[in-house]
Length: 149
Image 1 (cartoon, rainbow, N blue to C red):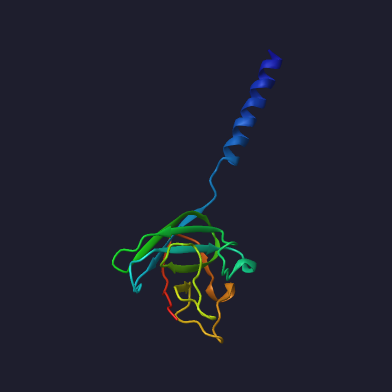
Image 2: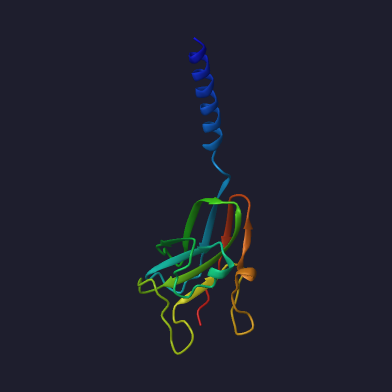
């Protein structure tokens, strides 16, 4: 009898502790909207970053999450779901030939690129995680401007 009570108590503590470990951490959704694309060819590639040392990422290798979306009438939108609360930055490519790479001329990209918090880029306004990042504490929608050089 005593052994049964001890086993029931141990089982009850196990169930109680398990319920705490299964609680979901707070997560958010991020909607990214892009408009004014110069055409509807290819796809838009959306790369999301959560580390300063990974951004900018010209070869799209160090991202936290990446999605691609179709273009309809010069507009594209994606939703990143179940993101932990934190600091993020976005890098976007209008991948007109759908090869997953930035096409370049001599130095400048031939395809459109965009970064969160940037309306233009130049030698004096280069993308960095500190400039492009934003705090995500709740569901959020941002618009990113695509820049064609």
